[in-house]
Length: 385
Image (cartoon, rainbow, N blue to C red; front, side, top):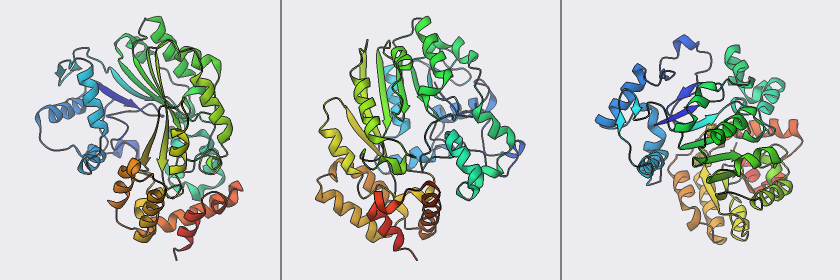
């Protein structure tokens, strides 16, 4: 029932499954990746047969496996819940479901974006493509991707096949790049309105820098919208992680969006990625959200990749310090899942040394320094020899 379409237009099982091409390996030799271009193709059918009749986990599904082992609510749980909410339609190994097409989508039409977030990659940000060309040491894998892959990211996609199935879509999750500046997203929203499918559940993941009327006027016509705003630190600190983002302006944008006239239900939440930079102070944003009546919630989640950004690889003493600080500020219980995920990983100083090196390189290039924004993280990196 579900399909993920990446920024380069490739189709995968979902956003959490193993999917990235291996650097330096030609397309014809990408042996591990499933061929999922054909919804009724052989690889899709093998996957469905295993999921319906097999035992255990697919190799591609290791992230959900790991999360469920920790007792966390996984993306697999989320999709299974949505299937039940949709009336538990019958599933089919060949066609997938009774409609014969996906009715749940995760769409990332291209990498066009106006920010250069430090934990992101050129695959998801056109601004980071520019930085990768200027400082290839920051993204060594980028040089190794073939030109076809690189060029596919910035092209406007032909989404006609998707538009033809618009009436069947029940859930769509839209990311980027930045969805509010992508013409394909507006094209899809207009088509859904045209065919009368405004009951579809829509989730938009945005960086909150753009509150333009045209995009949000389209979005206000739908019955159920979840607006997920990526906001990794307190507004006063946000410019460091999110590539010169104006945190105070973004906060004003979010309030403006909340005050628009919505036809249906709007859920407005902040999504906070927890990494080594903000592990010692991320709770500040949660406290601000608790004091803000027009925000629904603040969702926190430990960064998975790149590995060097994950605080799970810090020394144990620094992990304990992060936990102690959260407890002192009455923020531990609310974010216990973050710390349990962090503690489940073993210290890896090679990852931390890489973070220290890349942070220094990027700080010099951008003119923004870790010590001025996240001083405890700075001390943690300085502790690494």
